[in-house]
Image (cartoon, rainbow, N blue to C red; front, side, top):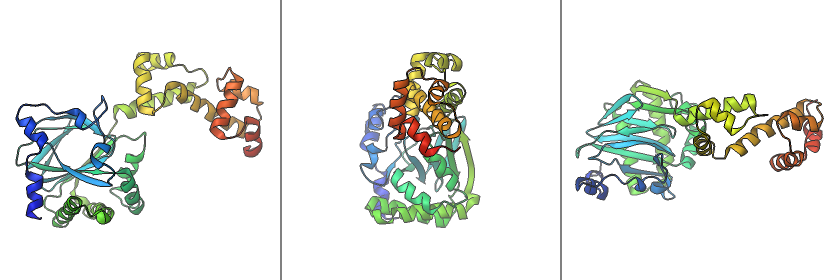
Length: 317
């Protein structure tokens, strides 16, 4: 490795200097979320891939990411806490965390150099198409893209694997020098090496995240009871207050309960229009709508046709 790059990765950052002067970690440097979801836009700034040395001299609090992250320990050791598991990476080891995972990191000392790689979704999707048959990485990447996916990590004990460590040196060099044209090829090659040397994979686990659990619970209830579902009944069923559940549904599903329920009802109506001979008015009542004109507007907005025209063009009978 180029000595100037080693020096660059080892030197104290301004953030670390502030921590040594007694300042606390500034969450605003990482996220705009109350739940401490590290935002890739704060670091990538339009790039497809970047790296940043892990912040030392502080216990890094539990957090998640809106991107896939992997850490390579260049020197020393760094310990991650994932759920109840403590994963200690030694020099040369690699830890992958999908975007559903949350973890904290124990205090690292000056000689502990961990390098966090931040991978954009755009680059990851290009690579994913190329490694779809990779027995180690394909399922992990697929779960990363799944909005309802669960937290997952892959821990590779690669400290004694020269080909992989040499490749990591090349990847670090390419990112520091900004040679973007080789990013995809190097990451793809890394995934291939990790599959070839699969004995280096010492631990992998799926952990149901709070978001995934809530998504499943809400979806299961709405699948069964969408015709007469209400936020009040749903919150009572799941044991939450209405205000809390309303906020969490908006966070997890990206839309308010009202629109989520509308999607379930319209999906059910669409299926009935295709597969049954029920009159449209009965379909409307069956899926829980009382306001016919509201149903017609919502259905046409979603499917681009009136219910009658949709049935004529798409009926399976």
